[in-house]
Length: 477
Image: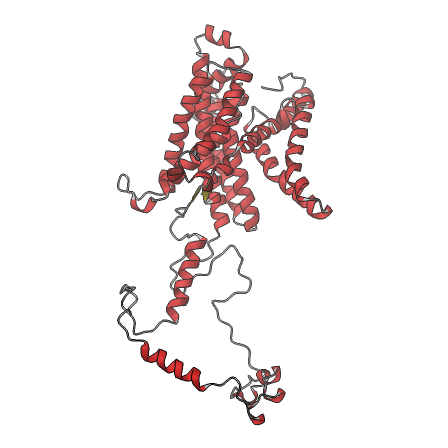
């Protein structure tokens, strides 16, 4: 298409704008930035429960962006991206457990540095696995990635001192300034309650020695208690006037009007005094703060987790969008469609496959680090084979060659179990059926999509649009 106007012979401003170097990157940044702001606005105006769902959708979408490149564009089969997520989760856990005491380049260790090292760990493992996978294809490649999905979580049992074994590792996530974990907030509130009733004569800064009361003579108190016990005879008969009767007991009327208790009942016109710091409508996701404002008032952990997951997902989406729409995306498609022809024009099929594995592993490791922050826990049970299969199912259902398909697949993965749980609660299904019904539906949906819509939801939609315009397109493109 010529950039010169046929009538004037000059290049129009719109054509100059389209041909401007880096124009594609700028437009991608605008699109991703707009989506980012809309999601943040949505996150700040929904219930914390839905914020937790939004965080899971963003986390799954981050991992499936890599699956789009590996499965959709590169044409390789992977059953082990859940294990690559485990790599990112464990690297994040190991680097952030002592984040307050490890400065790097003059900065305190925080979640950002842990995310960076999780990504580097994913790149390293992706390069190793990609080098092995470049020589394999079909069922052999599927077998390699399946072994990765089974083997990586099992490695944690071999190093229980470092990786926690079956119990995993509990994390104190380094929340931003003003944020705090629920355990930390409860501990601070508990300290305030304890200090309010403490003896003002004691200095809390002085450590208490366990043996400082060891030299006290308590024999005098023991002797008085023994004499008191001897004076009491359980067989002694009490006088009738010393016994309590029903009239001596307090009733609700005594408390309502003050009665003989020496209390003055408030006048009806007086309004009850309500503490300004107590709000009966406080959401369960918030933690009360003190008057000094040492903690961020209104901090909701679910919203923070969702905003963090959205930020990572948008950054990964920006990188994936530029890779897919750029030269590297055309290289992946060429090797997928005809590796021999690609090799003839100077493209290395093995290098293309390795690069796809590295990028997919990087995105999966970042998703695993986000998952660790959402759970505040990493363990072999969180990154099992079922996670890898869920990622593959989601990308097949949404569309293997589309980032939008990855987002739709993430929505299906999060929404389908909730739908099954809702139906189970309404119909009274047993737990065994409720727990296995999502897997059954996953299998049925995959079979239906492969037979009726090989391109997934987005591929089928694009093929319908092309047919309406009189164009033809491969459902996998």
